[in-house]
Amino acid sequence: MMPTRPVWAEISRSGLLNNWKLLRSAVHNEADVMAVVKADAYGHNAVACAPLLERAGAKWFGVTCVTEAVALRKVCPDARILVMSGLWGGEAGAIIEHRLAPQVWEPFHFDLLEKAALALGLGPRSVAIHLEIDTGMSRQGVRSFDELEKLLARCSAESPILVEGVMTHFSAPEVLEPDETQSQIARFTTALDVVAKQGHHPVWIHAGNSATAFVPQHLETLKKLAQKHSARLMLRPGLALYGYSPRFTPHSRDAMNRELKPVLAWKTRIVSIRTIEAGESAGYNMTFRASRRTTLALIPVGYADGLNRLLSNCGSALVRGKKVPIAGRVSMDQTILDVTDIPQVEIGDEVVLIGEQGGECITAYDLADATGTIPYEVTCAINARVPRLLVD
Ligand SMILES: *Cc1c(COP(=O)(O)O)cnc(C)c1O
Image: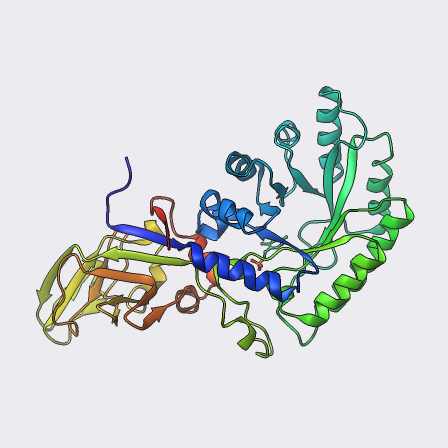
């Protein structure tokens, strides 16, 4: 049964396609763009978004794990899918069966893939991998060039493994001063020389996320690097696809990204209204105390839906085109709004938690700033029980 509770997230097709086109033009069509749809497309519903992007020209998708990849494979039978968090025991068979490209760096990743390929009787160079280089993020990837040489030596002409891609991840691509990304690119450059020296010629060299698409000097250096190795450059944006611009420091490039359109709007409706007198309280632990006769509206959304409890007494929502404050604690499944200043308020009125209404707007950045986090976490946190509906 479709959820009937009046809480939903609208996913804008036109917004997503607008952002995709903007990213394509930011790289001047000289680099390929992988659409990062990990974590269910940052909460936007990967199986709804990916086919739209594919029709707009996306050839590559980045997901977190094999489970996400297999779900995506059902709706994008021809797409290339990068599994970005390595692989674990028992997953190599599915990687081969579903033609996934795993991002790998640990010797045990190679063990698993070799063993599965052998069991299936696959020939040489039949399993494409993307080798990750740790250039400074210290999270995933091959760290030493010694280790890199050892891994590459396992990918001989007889091996079932083909080095289709070599990639790295930047830790602060939106920080332009000091420009740590340049030193990461320098390390990547050396690693790629090692790869070439051992006779491997990756089809793709990829690095950079949303921020990199809007930093011409990084884009230029990466383009030259790919050219040097006769490879295609690919970028891997996620956040910008969903309409949020990285926050650059110093704040020099924000104008560039104002055309990005937030894709997700989070909405609900007022399900109950009551009036309390001055001095009465609302919600758990009486943290909201009315200073005047106060009209309270109830919305059926709480922290179990992903509305952060840190928004208690500090977040807001839009009702009849006006910003109204959250009154008291956000509960598990419900939240109270102070709608005293909206005289016409009625049960059934639409409430916007993220999105626009009557010229007012609340963004995932607003919620992130109020809760000490980043917009990524805000949209990812919207629980699966909130249905995602494709609109426009
Ligand atoms: C999440 C992720 C991206 C996308 O980053 P955005 O900041 O959302 O553009 C790119 N590459 C890797 C390896 C990632 O983990």
